[in-house]
Length: 286
Ligand SMILES: [Zn+2]
Image (cartoon, rainbow, N blue to C red; front, side):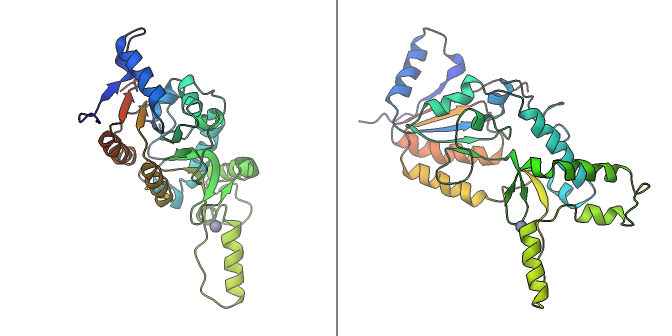
């Protein structure tokens, strides 16, 4: 007979050698299928500041809003994202980052709110494909993307474009020897090659032109819905159908809507099956 009452255990309250810690160890060893939701607290432990705070990844909040792609902030946005990405590559994953990978083959998937790529460094296959076991809920700094077709491109291939472009942008037109207005450059700094070539073909055929994708960091902006949210929802539905019996919530107070919805989506069925939800609230200097 399955227990009727859900068990919500907080790892932070479990002392070494305590009965509670033993109970958690027992839950972990008897669980068959595990889902993990990870948040900023996990990366704070690696030394990366909370994105909400000064010095954090998104400290310049006004820059990381969706509208910045479509106005004069775009160049600064790309340059800032590039420098954040460069900084993020210097950090090393913690034991908590490595934990989900160590749960294989029990791990169904880890859903992370972090964009710093440390789960990938810790050995998880990160992305939105069916074989990926780590889903970056807020995108990732791993790649650049084009905003219409979501094609991924390497930062290295665009580093010089981005750095040069920003230099022109900062000169506010005074040293603009090309004869173009800064406005023009801001409107179309790095058009998507795939969209551009499709557009060219249509132009030659006398067809209506389509919008061209613009280069953007692969992370999701603070005020933006995930452009590939349906893929994430599809993976989560599949994981739920696989009947997980343990949900680990690590380093997040789940104040953001997406992860909060995920918790509800997984926790309800897990509780009904008599499974467990363990929340480890890593302190997020709030
Ligand atoms: Zn494109």
